[in-house]
Length: 116
Length: 112
Image (cartoon, rainbow over all chains, first blue to last red):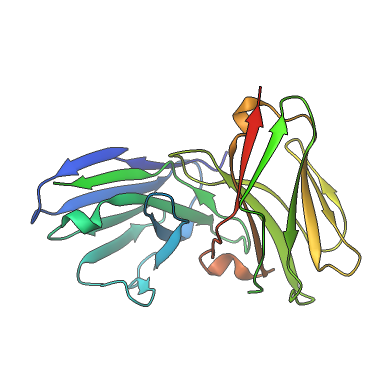
């Protein structure tokens, strides 16, 4: 149980275009989902916290107008990278916290974004 | 959440026990110690967590010192598939509402 999927697993897009990444909790409902970013040889950095039915909370330094987050259901959150640039190339990882539990987060497999 | 300190890398022979240390000297009374690992190009995987008692599950054992200022993750019989970056994270019991703060972790390399 507690499986989180991400789609796509990798994507290549051209500079200036937008790309959407999906995060799904497959066998549980998740009131809260988190989005992380990981650059090569670095650790994961929290980008934003996504709560179902409300606006996402972004970490300091993360542009909310560039990284659009939608958490419209208890099993799906999406991250849209708008007007992508090469410096946005990174490994994007989501995690989901089952509703009703305080401490567990389950991570997706990640999405590799390359902007050319 | 309290800060943690881990060695940047460790080697361990396949089949031997891998002991990964973590210092968390500023941990407070209601903070748990969590361990995750990340295999290359994958999402992190939860391993184990504890408050003050030693814990064991099918993946690993967690030994927490009596003063709770440090802990050790033990992989009893390491395999090549255990090669990964291991993260020690300290967080409040209700901290599931917050995203995780990952440090640099320990890159564990299992040698054949």
